[in-house]
Length: 333
Image 1 (tube, rainbow, N blue to C red):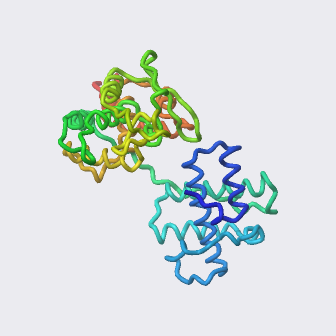
Image 2 (cartoon, rainbow, N blue to C red; image 1 turned 135 degrees about the horizontal axis):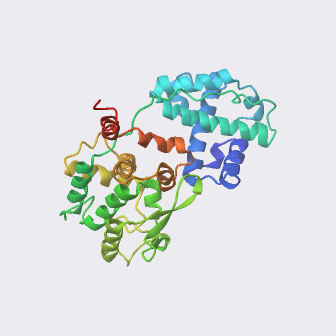
Image 3 (tube, rainbow, N blue to C red; image 1 turned 60 degrees about the vertical axis):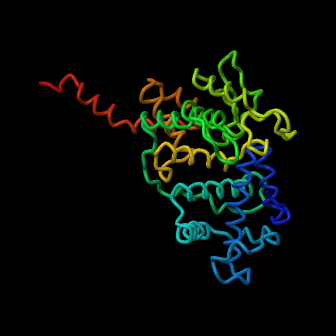
């Protein structure tokens, strides 16, 4: 939870701007706050504005007393130094550094371009760290079937004291069939589902709403869960939440992550290699590989803002590439 009293006023103003004008989600606002607060703590350390002498204790530094005069001193080299600190101290990957750099760019764009609070934008020429091109990890079709089969089997205890087979099966089914994000699944409300039209609406990144169409497996799984979903004693604020915890509250991100890890292990799949996000990769890959899905349709389904993000799934299927080469009309000449 963000405590505005821990932040300088200009940071709180930036968060308000991001939430209202940019319409960023609560999760994005928390990330912005964490990233910029961490950056400002580093700046106080770098500028020797604190008694803290060890970089490992940066998080103990208070930043509420920082002023815009302090921000005006920041240069591009200071930002580069912060990114280097993240890599050296936390072994941050290029993707993480790119996200931090993006947040810093947005922050200084607000201070310089939008509000004219600083005379120079030090992040104007900030580049993204070069990304390592890696193909996404995903379950094979056989592994996906095994995971669904295992999850569908009743268990004496499933994440707690009760058998949550129907709930967990519906969760895994939606992940593998729809490719939705963790936050999107957790945020599903019953009113968002239309069985008549075979679809549901989810809130994705940037608070953008999109429609996800439900195939027969998804509809059956959701209906089976609704038959056993608790009704009495559900927290007032969570009465419409589709997926509930054993405390009868909207299920949390962490609980869903635990469920996925647990079911992967029971299915005999290495849970250290796969995660909730890997199930999203799996859904996208299987749809592209077996569903003859147009890349633009896949982009819409996954809620990707850029087609470049979706195009990674056009490179994962070596079997299709091999098949194309073998069927070249010149192959047998």
